[in-house]
Amino acid sequence: MKESTSQPHAAADALASLDPLLQHRSRLGAMVLLTGADALSFVRLRELLGETDGNLGAQLRKLEEAGYVSARKEFLDRKPVTWYAISRGGQTALKAHLAAMGAVIKSVQP
Image (cartoon, rainbow, N blue to C red; front, side, top):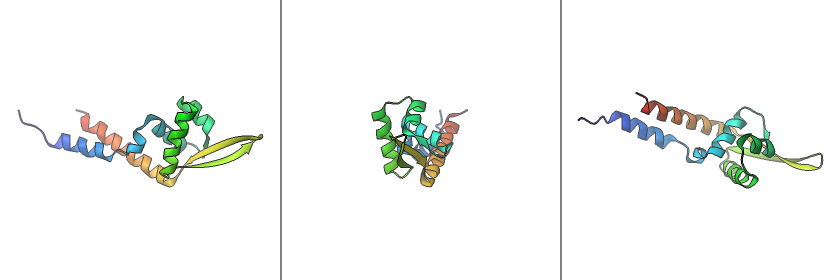
């Protein structure tokens, strides 16, 4: 049986193109949700993603440290609210990651 080298090579290239930071469900989910909004509050992201405060806070901090999202804090009705927005760099990274995911899917389809 002859082994095809093009399919495994394409799959390996696609896998290598995935952004390690966006491979976590919560981080990818937050990025996708933020793409469709000017900004979302921490509470709204927590509700939409079904995460705990601690886990979501840690994941958003990683995205913020990478420059993928920005955070803005303010007070509403005397309560602190943190708003998150996706940055241009974050948009670029998300598009590249989704394109790589598409290439991975394409590499395994008959």
